Length: 329
Image (tube, rainbow, N blue to C red; front, side, top):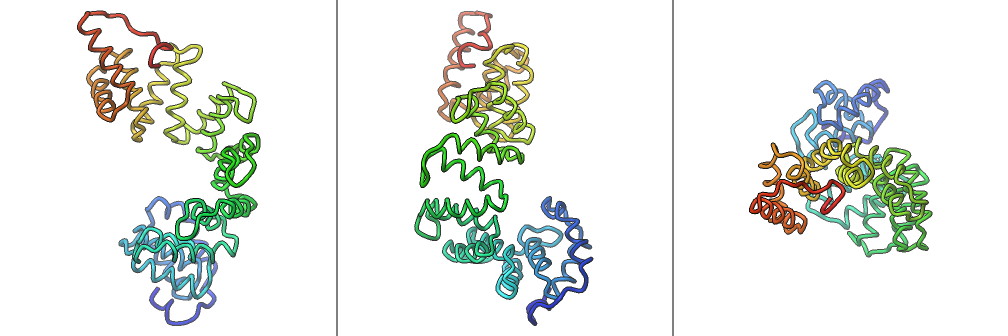
């Protein structure tokens, strides 16, 4: 792509070049780009093709098909952002400034590039700018401006912005508080398989916040989010299964969900898994005790109580097990 900096961008050699590279976008995201795809990108980038320049910059940023080189990523993305005003390149360059990759960390400069991309209505840039306004990163905090950016992004169908906007309605920050409108926006995002929105909406159905309470709908949403690998959903669904009707029959399924969440580092799931294994899986006592000891060391009261209960039972020789729906469960 060295030739890309020698002259102003001109038409690419063939739409087929970019089309061929674009068929590998999923591979790009999985960090499995093959060298021939990078070669296609180089060919198009050498002709100043903005999509190729941006994609090649991404490759260097994350090390897909080439050795990771943050400085080269910055060079390519800056050229593309400045010479072609391509919003995706502007957004990518902003991220490099926010994380200090290939450049000195400079959130104000990151915001400047986000603004340029947002001016072209790039949804991801509008979402990022909303986060900056909300948190006061790189510019003064302004929740009203954050909401304004999110409204523009949701009009472009940006799912994460729907979830973010719902949160503002749920909390009443910068907008009139409305759990009903929050539920509507969470619902829109959940319908597009946004797991975080599903988890929040499931909780609203569980508590009857902004919607009529529905255990069935709460379980349905948690289950779908759990299938998508969301650890919070896996943990919450396990708790519902353990606490509701048919808890004994749900024990195996709940244990599997707790294990999935625990493997993702969900601390409360690791603690609850320890409780369940200690009570209902004698052959897993060693694993259970290790999980509970780790949780107790982290200051989790449930783990401390369960270990004390186990120690008391060991001293008295009691073999009685606590009910699934009782006590800590």
